[in-house]
Length: 194
Image 1 (cartoon, rainbow, N blue to C red):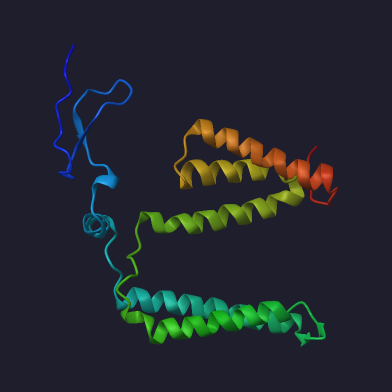
Image 2 (cartoon, rainbow, N blue to C red):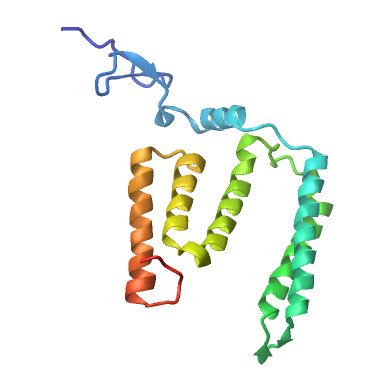
């Protein structure tokens, strides 16, 4: 029988932890052992490098461009009046907010030090958008079940880093729940295979 080494109480550096079949006495940094200052310092070390003024300006211009594009498209759909709105009224209001935020960020936010430099993980939102667009394009052709299942698997496993077991289980439950709600219960006209 081996004894676990004693850890001085309150030193806040390491704790001897025995879990499952792990070797006894392995020091592990536990977040609850850190002071707020230590946690802030650790987060500061782990965060990606800060983006520069050029990256902040570029991101502001992207938001501004998307807002202006949406503004033009919403005007083409027609605005109407508040008493009798047309399809473009709500997108027009959102587009105006986007344009204002883009301008504000362009003028004030380019000196922001909190923005992070683009890393490999910065492509995750783009991957999510592309896979969502692919699902929407495939739904009228093959129904929503298979595209939704593939979308859930990609998002959970490859973007979220979940295990294969939880990915497959949760993806199947999500698709079954959507089928039960939108096809069986509400009898909507959503394209489906079964």
